[in-house]
Image 1 (cartoon, rainbow, N blue to C red):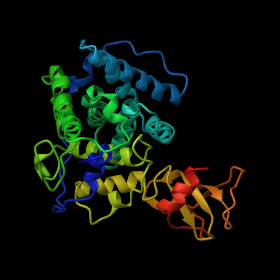
Image 2 (cartoon, rainbow, N blue to C red):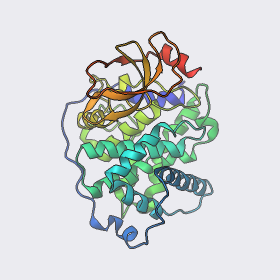
Image 3 (cartoon, rainbow, N blue to C red):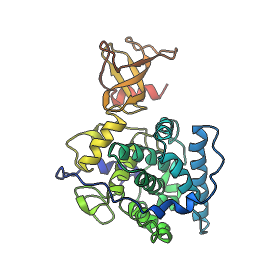
Length: 340
């Protein structure tokens, strides 16, 4: 038998494939956002937090509508993505909210928002055109829509899933494709990304066991972003875990080109992770620098003697020749910190 978490971490424990670069998808047709462009923009949110929570509310409403077997409109999401993807500054600011949200009991909406933000960061590094960023962002936001139909008794179950429960979870890509089918004529990549986001480079993914170039690049980016999000946030069945396996260069479950962009944008020591510095202090990464994965901004949590630091003290390792990260905090140390 398998736990729900195992369905996620399987993605980072197998696979190898050639380091073959792929070209970005062809530009999205100009008509993609034409309907949104003709609609008056909604009132500008008061803050970036409002943008994040606004997306959360829209996804929760869509989830309720799906459970009630009613039709829903994704036009409001298209409008939001037009504004977000068109502003690198907004993406960067919203990125910081991914450490604040995603640990809720019902994490289905925040997981999708965080995955969208990670996917957009990766695609920016891959030099996606604005229209492609918008399309990718919408696909990422809706990639796990099939999970909206999975019973809470499974999603929140801390124990091992039965074979039947596991099979139910594994059907969510197909459910997602069906839910998004009404938009296939205008936006075929939506259903495709939802259907393929659990496929892996070596063919060990599901539901069809696709490999390499058989998998759309949108799905490759979203699959990596989704896996990373799940591994770095608390879940009912486990605490957040180390992402060392995910970023290990020996792991070939994800496309090398996508992984390289991920490492450039997300960092070896991602926001929210705990690290040990060379002066023996322990801290939490609160900011990263593009192209400098080893030099994050660290909030000091413990001094060299293991005493908790109550004052808010941060250290920017970029340009600091005296201090550097010696390594990620072990699972045992992390467990001790989180029990405080």
